[in-house]
Image (tube, rainbow over all chains, first blue to last red; front, side, top):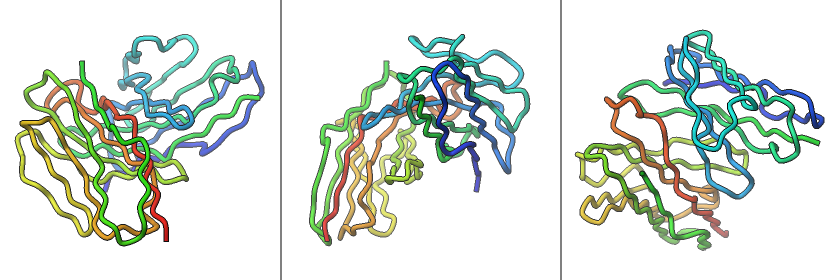
Length: 114
Length: 118
């Protein structure tokens, strides 16, 4: 079955630094990937839609300059949290779309900003 | 706008009890998909089921069963003879149908924390 790999699983960074999270489709090509954020004890909220070869589409209220998304190949999308602050501490998880198939998620990245 | 409501925030049962997790949704789309995911403490999302809005047949998979009632916009999930390993957060989610450009953009419910005690 389709496998989505996300890296790193967890990361701790200092306030003001940037963190890059990778989302890879391992055995299929994904022209579209999605990035979600989940705060502790809350639901998952869609942040943005990542499209291969074009600009990402951000949901309302998500700062595109803070959460940079790059989808340069059919198997890799990256989310960079720039100038991270403690309030950005969250669980970030990606999914990849294969039209007509169930949606598979990466294992998520737990970000802690100190 | 799409909306998914899981009214049960937390459920606690004793092992071997049956438990039903409720899910009610709202959408203007005529075709759509409904999903259930399990999120164990480790955080990953485990896919359980995807149901097309045209298919109202109930489904059973081992101890799991799903009841889709389009007339009441509900997609409830039942675990029969619950086990401690079923303890997790369960999310119901909704997406536009597969042919649409928004397929894959999931609207999640708030989640139900299920605790199964030995």
